[in-house]
Length: 59
Ligand SMILES: [Zn+2]
Image (cartoon, rainbow, N blue to C red; front, side):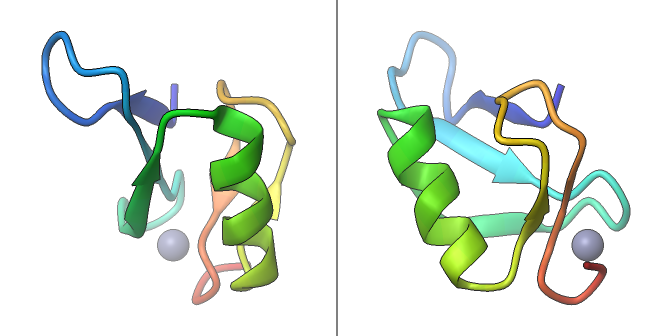
């Protein structure tokens, strides 16, 4: 599971790289919006919140 709630009970998501553990600097409330921004920034992986995902440094 690589997209996790930013805080307990929060509605926002944090995207984390499965390879190095780095977190994408932005959070989002909508998975696809966050993922599209991340892929534009060089992240790669499945377009599902469950991953796997790789950051721009690992991808
Ligand atoms: Zn990484």
